[in-house]
Image (cartoon, rainbow, N blue to C red):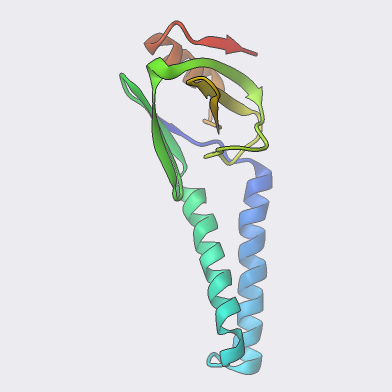
Length: 143
């Protein structure tokens, strides 16, 4: 089963605000100094790459539950976790450090193996938790 990622207004403002700001700088530089002004080529390229990364994360973040694995993807961050390795899920909390293939606050902290954890934010925490607990009823749900 596939799940779309919840998109928080904070991440939306960061992505689209950066796009407007960076494109404004680029347009100003192109029209005032010319497109071939060599001093700023590196900064222009850096801004475009940052924008590309933000939009890649914005439009590719998703999660999938199969019979045996949780698959996550968010831009360049992707991976799999076997559902039998998951032992605890904390609902409606935000993980501020660590692996976060998510774009919203108040998502799910998934603890697996002995000390590993990942933060995800599906559109509906309740539906996601219900589906994963159907697959592995031994998962402890907190919250």
